[in-house]
Image (cartoon, rainbow over all chains, first blue to last red; front, top):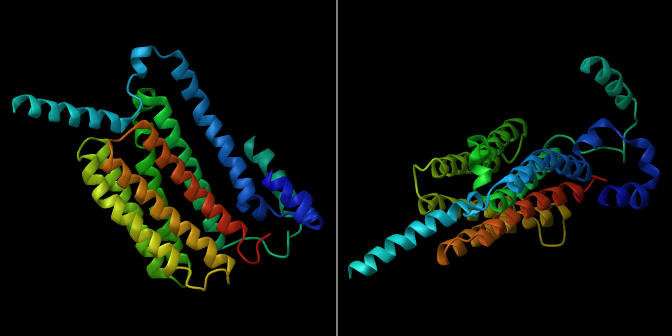
Length: 81
Length: 202
């Protein structure tokens, strides 16, 4: 949308003046490249998550494990008291 | 074969005339590359939270965030070397990014705790926010698009520090992890906006 707005509305007269540098460094183009790269990385991840068993998906956060450990140690301390 | 195909394509691309009387080159293009990088890695942080343990099956994926920070640090060193002015600002950011990557890497391999990593990350994000915002773009508010957009980037540093502080105040949750990822994406977007709305760029 950003790119379409730029080339079709804001800078219509400049469509014929595109350069390779502009294509490679334009924010809108980089957003599109980022989206493609993200698809390449994420589609296999999505397939792995879809194929995983429930017990393999229990912990949703890497930090949650640390929090559980902290809570566990606090629970032990409270029980000792 | 790739060379045979890409050669004529590159030659064709070079024949295209200039767009808008001057495309973004040099230091300004750096904003876009850093922006795209942070947008990408921020998205990966969100995906990491959503994928849970599946993400950490491969060490390469686990180390993506610290590696991205270090790569950004190296990129900032190159910017500091190439750009004739603002060398101190860029060097400061480079050192913060490299150290941030080191701390995050050590946390992810289990050498240090999240609290120890945050003890560096939070002050570093605040300092980076001040360096990118008020120090790097010292112009009156609403007088310069470049200064205003840099201030926006600086504010994103403060926002990320705030999210980390929230994670310390309340227990870390998947929602807060994802929020941090979204914050990094917003940092990337702010850098892309800095590129897009800088004077002279169309």
